[in-house]
Length: 111
Image (tube, helix red, strand yellow):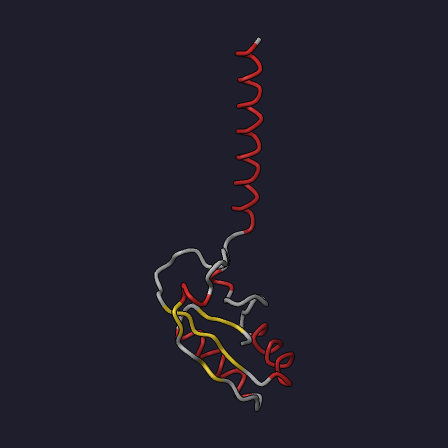
């Protein structure tokens, strides 16, 4: 498996781009939850399906280069599915500040 798209039209576009360069590509329709079980890559979303794309092992590097040109970010999904990394950072900063504020409040009340 080279990549996974959340939408059939994206998977078809990627497969067509790969095949246009003479590389065999196959799309399979899978259950999104089972395919990504244990992964936080795809939070619950609108689609129950995932579309993995398979290419021959010897063509994997070349196919990946083609997909990067098509907007793939190198992980299993496409860029539209990616969670904004600043959201994760802001959440971590907020949680840290809330923890520090709670610790200070407990120290003040305990004095």
